Length: 573
Image (cartoon, rainbow, N blue to C red; front, side, top):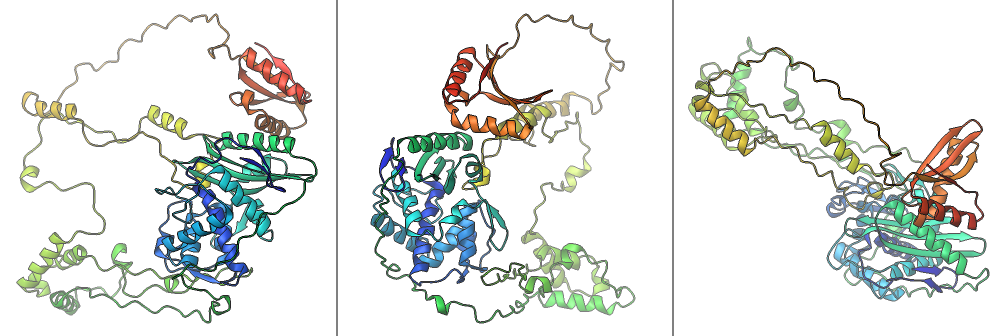
């Protein structure tokens, strides 16, 4: 969908009303409702939000919020708008709507007021859910309302980075903002179900165009398509058009049943230090008796505690001071400090208690048989927090020596496996991980340590048919194979005729040549999308080239660039 931002005139559309997964474009509605609530006094930018467990449990992209943490609204806005943080958007939704369902109802009510006819929201951040849908037309309407209804906040969408209290957040859209002239927003989106989405706005002179793309195959392809659409919009839009802002929806307030927030009553009055958590019982009466008996043996007990194992020393009953005191922030901007929520200390491990009790015999510690039985039960019935992958063989198996040849299972990935995995994961134009609306898929190579059936069968057979030791007969290396005669290749390349290219001329620096290549690729992605960008160092400067093209594609690309008034020449084999 391509629209004149000034008048709302549709300049181009294709499948623009098809309901699709909007991904993080959803956050535009979350932010719109947040701005609306601030404007009508429900709360302020400095109001403090207590992060819910639901918000803190959202998958990446994340700001890194923890349950019970307190943070100002302004920092959640920055994280949701710039970094596309799912936990920040969910925290805003829970704060405004009371819970996810309550906020989704308010989102749908607002969408209906704005005229978004093919939209239905289920959550505040856009993660894929059944029934969570929107269209390119509706998201273009949403972006236009953000621009006209809240111009005082619109600049946040053009920022490349910002301070979000916990960390500095960086824009998921900074690549397009840097590459396209006049671009100043608005929002990216990516999930595996939606593909690469973008609602963008740009201004040149008196003209301002807004457009939306759904379902891009990569960040580079999506940005190139958006550049083409905006170029089309600037070409079709009149130089001077009457500005007709959209109708501002009537403020309806919170949904029924949602808490009404009052900004002036939400300022924190004090920040009390959390008290120590009650210490859980470390053992029963028998264990206490064991400890007292051990303490009586003064000649066997060292007064120092330096030989206490680290895993036991860390599990103290009293929280460490650094876990109790809130981290003092260094930001001098407006907003309350974030209070750190102390983590509950883990309870003692029963298996460690049992091992400590079994360390001394009964005649030394004075433990009763009942205490020893309790310690044994605790050691056998309750597993430890960390389960080891290996196991100890039973006594019968350990007493019998193994027979047959030994097979060694190599768990290290082989070099060719690593190269294939890296080649699959490396996509210089893919920013799905930076956009962070879904966890990046990992390379599909699994390294297993479980012996294969044929290996096990060979081992079992060898246990009865072969001796326990195998002596290799060949101890001397084989004679070297004769060197192969060199072959003469008659063709110039193996690229299937793609030995043509296009030269854009010489530039004063490597950076200038790279930038011109990138700008040109975005400008004419249809003919140059598959070409490789290469800067060749010459005596007189740096030559910007597109290579790896067929003769026909190179001639067509050069003709289209010359039609735009750009220098271009063919490079032949």
